[in-house]
Image 1: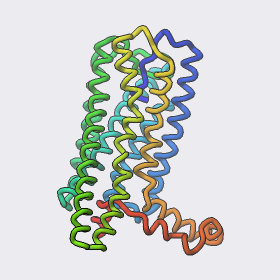
Image 2: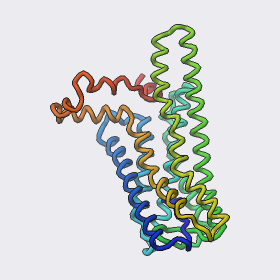
Image 3: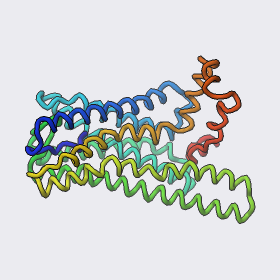
Image 4: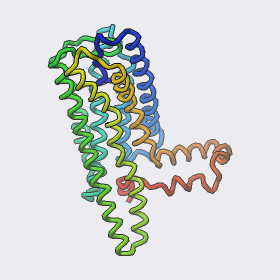
Length: 318
């Protein structure tokens, strides 16, 4: 991955082979997961709402980030540059797309705005423009060396500092923003639930509790970025202050968790009830007998229909 590039002389050739295998395996899982979400969006017309379109852009960024992380060859100049620039660009784009999803949810639920679709062009300018600026800035202070299976390894303090500024600072800014946004949304729905109980509005209470069940899951989504990049952040800080003392197990966790970000995103953001329902409907259309064996007819769609959608999904349908 773009952030998992700091390998030192203290790591043996065997250690680097292990890290290469971990990176390739985890990136392949992320590539498969994100490609599945992209394919679902392209195949199922009923999924092409604005809310899932943002998930599609997120999956597309994850897919390309994982792809370039796999194909990069540090012993060939062109492919080395392709890996270094592209993985950084698309990894930054990935976590920036999560902030647009959080912004859309907040604007729809908390501020009761219905103009989010008009902001799509601004979202693209924000995500791709910021990713480009961060990638170009990272070239400053970079000696363009490579080590092990990754390209673009910064060996000087200036390059490492710029790497931290152009990747980890925006990353943790996105984590803080997402966490604060989801906290506000969940708090508002909690207040709405208490008000509904006080007014004895059973229908509204039921709807709000359904929304809460869906949004409680989304409240954990900032943890995806934390889990993917916490070890990478610690590894970068340690490498900055102790450049001649690399820790293999920390680098192992750094490489493995960062490369799995695309898989985590595809499961959390992409495999919602709308996607599962679309898949079940296609299976029922082409293999009704087999599907009925897997799911009893009285339960085939019951659980899917009862599962709450995101509030912003509901708003678009109204």
